[in-house]
Image (cartoon, rainbow, N blue to C red; front, top):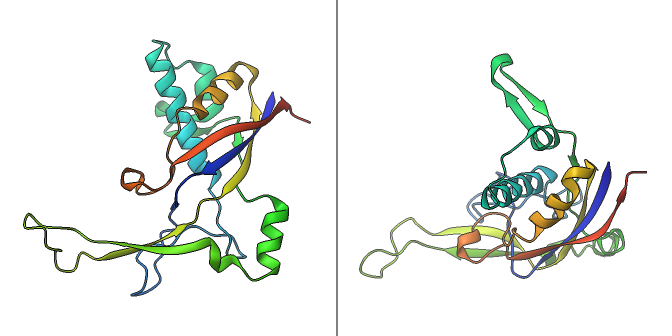
Length: 189
């Protein structure tokens, strides 16, 4: 089993939704920890990596085998239950020193801004009641890790990072452009 530590470098603002709003001011807030700091949930990374590995295998005409399903998990139809995968995807977060500096200086509010957009009709006029505001995180770098990566899946996981070009909501509108790179790869301790 291996551990992969990775870095997500955001090149544009990004939004991983919390499902919450801020009343009439903002329609969609980003997910934050208990100190108000942004992060990318591990389950989001897992879904993107899984999708990328599936795409890579499809392009190479390689079928999804038992190592894939045991690593990522699967739904067992005959028992009507979900089988958890062997890999664990931790949340991607700011580096500890950076995180602590921002929190200790009450500067977390500078990590965010609000972006507004509206729908335009065929006459290039804003449609009524279509103004929406979302909270976004400014470009930054986050770090995460995947543990219990089976040896036979390690190279595919690393290769999949190159297939992930955008992350979060509104990817088709320019948000979440990123690069994911390996910081460290090794056996679990």
